Length: 219
Ligand SMILES: *[C@@H]1O[C@H](CO)[C@@H](O)[C@H](O)[C@H]1NC(C)=O
Ligand SMILES: *[C@@H]1O[C@H](CO)[C@@H](O)[C@H](O)[C@H]1NC(C)=O
Image (tube, rainbow, N blue to C red; front, side):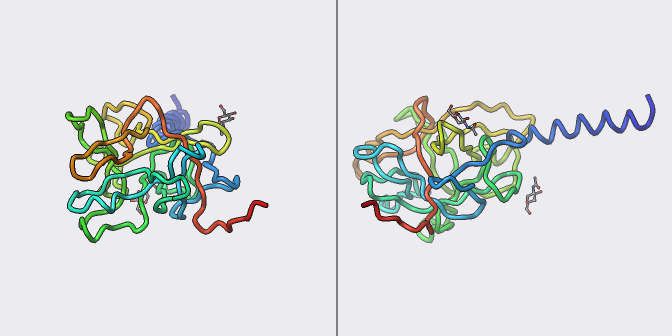
């Protein structure tokens, strides 16, 4: 084999591997409700696509005082958009793409009460409910075996409608499973009923609204 062919073979192997790392190469951009590309570090609300009884946007469990880290909830009122979110792709791209591992962070990024980050993380299996709840307190970045539970994806459902999934590929030697993220009622003896995010075969479907969007009055 000539030196050039050898170099080419090495390059092909290397580039295939790096495109597998963290998600799909050249994936389509995620779009907000207005059809604009969703940008890294820009604030969006994630709101239910079901109007009426579908509930509102996602929020931190600020009212579960004393429970740290803060859980990720869906607000019950459908007019309540919840807390803004920012997305941080593992590939550091400025546009957020489908099927790409992301850190998902609430704004504000830090909880003074819990002294931890408001970045999403998958909690340990909860045997009392049989759920894998989504919680906060993750470290951003540092893809690898130690941060496997900190990466979520946005997957396409239909035009501008998405679901979250947990399907991390930030560690080549790790075994990981893919699951969608849905919403369950968590009956807490002290805090009452809370709608919480957890791994689920029934994904929660949402749209993204830029927080700085100008609200147009519908006549
Ligand atoms: C993304 O940025 C971080 C921090 O600057 C850096 O450590 C990492 O290597 C970058 N990742 C890629 C895929 O460029
Ligand atoms: C999203 O899903 C819809 C419905 O399956 C499909 O028509 C559309 O092409 C998909 N878009 C992307 C970017 O994959």
